[in-house]
Image (cartoon, rainbow, N blue to C red):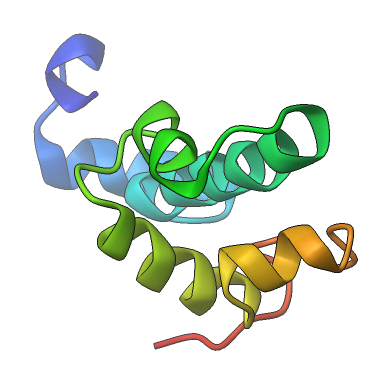
Length: 93
């Protein structure tokens, strides 16, 4: 993103954080988790396909990231009907 914006990584990250309110990678990760939360409600995709759709190389990595963001495993989230938006109340590490 920094190269696309014509800036160095540090300068880009500082400006992005000032404008958006969070670092670029956190912003992207939250977007991925929000998309991952939306997919089970709108499709019957298995967890490994949801992981690939939101750019995770493995279902395990996706599972761990989703749990960290939402405080619940992806399967539990799906079964509960998506009561909590990922990125909005899970553990922060």
